Amino acid sequence: MKITDIIVSRRQLALTRPYTIAYKTVSSVDMCWVEVHTDQGIIGKGSANPSKQVVGESMDDTMEALSGELLDRLKGHDIRTCPAICESLHTWLPAQPGAKAALDIALHDAWGQVLGLPLVSIWGQQHAALPTSITIGIKDVAETLEEADEYIGRGFKILKVKLGQSLQEDLERLAKLRETFGESIGIRVDANQGYTPEQVSVFFKETEEWAIELVEQPIPADEVAEMRKFPRETRNLIAADESLVTADDAWQLAQMPKACGIFNIKLMKCGGIHQARRIAEVARLSDTELMWGCNDESVVSIAAALHTALSYSHTRYLDLDGSLDLASDLAKGGFVLKDGMMSLAGRPGLGVY
Image (tube, rainbow, N blue to C red):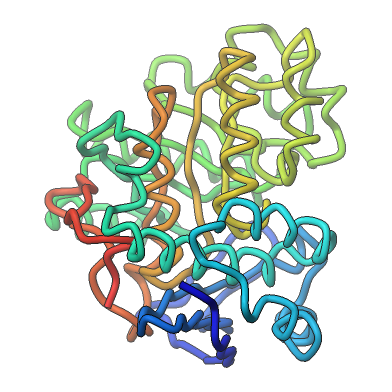
């Protein structure tokens, strides 16, 4: 069960529709693709799309890290020792979470295939299925309502709305969503660090009657001390995103008074499944709920996040819509999506092909 070869390539994938968040507009995805080959003919697939703004790693950095000496160092390892290999990756790639994630995901896929089990079954499946939100970028009211209507027509029950450029316009969009669709849909919001602490207080006051499920990273990532000053009821509804990159960050956020009630884990931030599970354990010990998010990603890394998410009883929220906007993907399978509910198909490894 030895690793015989690792193939790394770079692909540019178009999105079906560009979208805008607080600090950029996105129309395509630069993707890193990894295949781990074994002497038994098994191929583990991995992919990564790190966010330069969040983790400081560009795709050029990712591709440079996944070359030469590192790949040679991995050859010959027994894939059945996947957890130990991934622990070594954390040492070998301390500042390249994207490169680490791509390799980590491919290694886990191969590991599950060798064992003949879906990854979630190795850890113990705690949820059969959970609903995912689907994201609406920053748009005017009319475009927001049009896109929401499309997604609801496709069966989605939870919308995540990107905010953060204008508090007044944000409130108008949310008011119209509630007025138009009533309580039939769940609404989450992501301010992408776009508010001041004062604006956060106004936001929670104005939206108190609108049953907002959660608010992702409303203030800048480095203002954790300010997050701790919010009332407990507010902090319980805040999901740390850009403030939460590593397990060390999770530990700091969990110190009393807790800065947030929800950890948004993204494999592209923390460096793959192995490190994500460390964050999830900090959440379990600190009574913090889990949300699993993503960038624009292949079904490969989305499936990796879903397998991991469904193995934890304190997973409450999925935001794993990152592959749905790709005009084409590098693989198929990985998960089943029906009426906004995500589940797994029961195939070994990640279940992608």
